Image (cartoon, rainbow, N blue to C red; front, side):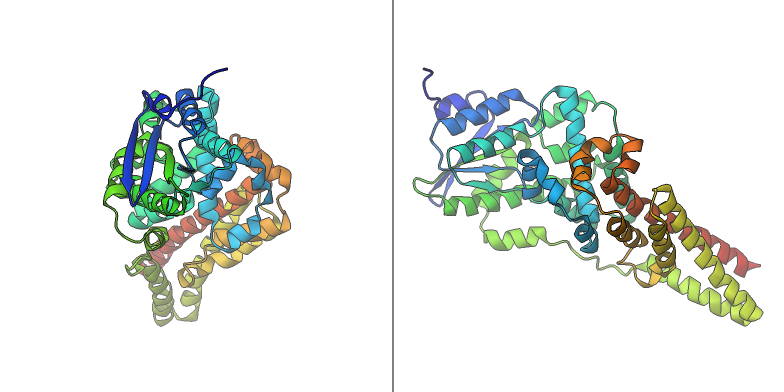
Length: 406
């Protein structure tokens, strides 16, 4: 019979740090998210019996995706759209698609060591804490720091992650072995962005340190906590765990809030002013005919191109109609995009089945799968209807200016 592994055996050769504060001993085990050796190290550490609490670099959504993939089938897509969480859902899906590419290329599921930590801790009836922040919140906070062009690049990068089928470049894999899966998944389109680094890495170090302090306070004596985190978080997490003094609950609340833009929505105001001003100018210059012509150009361009977007996504006729009706009103209700309305109608009429959710990760890897899968098609309706609306706005603006300049 093999002897019971010790903590020293488990940590040998593995990046790790030990921090003691408030009577709790935190062992931070740095892992590579695509390494069999990391899985073995996690199993050995938990099997040593030296820890009474296990914390992992996961949020509840990622944990379910790893440990209980069938749980996605219980998701209410209509509720996701209605509550404005479509972008967050798409972000989680993009991360899952990226992980699937890695798994097929490397022969190991990214995050396998985190999954194993949860399973082994449960088997030994140890409390488990999920200390990472929700991926969707991280993406939303990152987007709130960026200008409009960088937000488009961020959204484009997420969309590319959903449909990409080529192999992950070697340099990304090497970075992933030393760093963080979110940082790696953003790398293609977010390099040299201090705003994204702050949100994706530094903020999460603070968030996870607060989660560890909460876990430590809840641990039974002797209060030894094992934290399984990506190796790229070791330095920052150790520092935060040592120096952090803010209340963990308050810190979590602050890092989960999505800052509202304080800037005046000049572009939206400009569109509204141009439309109303153009109608007034047209009425003064050419009477009702010219004024109505300005309005018709706006209605036609935005409605038609929103409808075209929904049609290209394979939307139901009523989804197409909903997008066409709502699109012209965007300047007056910027918080409700036309794509959300179309997607909501699509999800209600063509309600996704359990099988759609189960097949989702595989279906989004092919164009045919996007149109076959009702969940993926609803997301496509959301995306393309919004793109159509944006294109219609620009075309309408150009035509209105041209009309008034004659």
